[in-house]
Length: 157
Length: 196
Image (cartoon, rainbow over all chains, first blue to last red; front, side, top):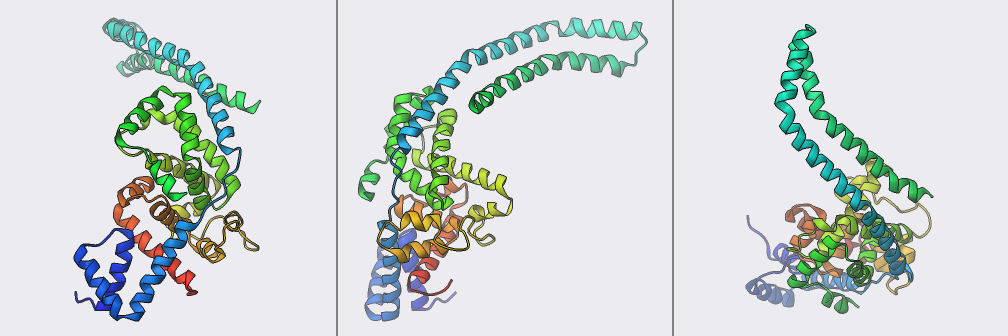
């Protein structure tokens, strides 16, 4: 693709400010701008736009940092108070999983025996086994829901 | 002010210590970070929301999120892009909850109009920026889509590299570049009185 000198200059002016250009390209651009008034104006207005941007400032609300620090500290205290509860939940999950894994063969045989005795289809007592495994997860989910609903109520007050 | 802000950018060793502190939810560290980044974060939020009051709310929410998700910062990359991307996601979530269409304002500038400006009178962004002298720049920025204002701020005020901007935006570098070129071209046109 052939690129005319002005199009190349325009591209290099933009690239120079956004991602940088090589020394060779800088030298070519410098020479072109010295000869071409239109491209020099273009380069000047780009430079001016960037300079204007860099010169802008936003007034900072005076108490913003201190208010934020206070909110963050309160939230940190709140989170800290939940930590023991979380540890308990995790410990309970671990114990539940260990007991579940250890007793799974017995529960399977027990449910199988019960299923046959009550003339239930295999699918029914096998689903019962699945539910038995899901029980700790259900209990944990309930605990988590209760735990998470706590802060909302506190914030509403 | 810009030079002083640049020097406040954290060094690699500091980012690792910072990651450890954030994992511990160290209150002293968080206080220091809030002080250190207050201006830059607030300015960024003003640019992308266009509303200083809303920017204050997002500012506080961002630091709460930093506290809660501090363990997700690995300390291998710079802190600033991580911080800004948290702030950005909060704004996007808010836009999403507000209305679907306005989500495009930050994600796809070509599809959406600027999200926040009232039809009449000066915009909140214009009001907050009008404390400074160059009203033309303010008026021009006001006309740019938030996504363009955002990349201009990150590149020319935050002095972030393209990769860092890409990580804030969760977008490819090619997208960042094209937005920057387009934003710069539009701004230049607006400043010289052309229409975009």
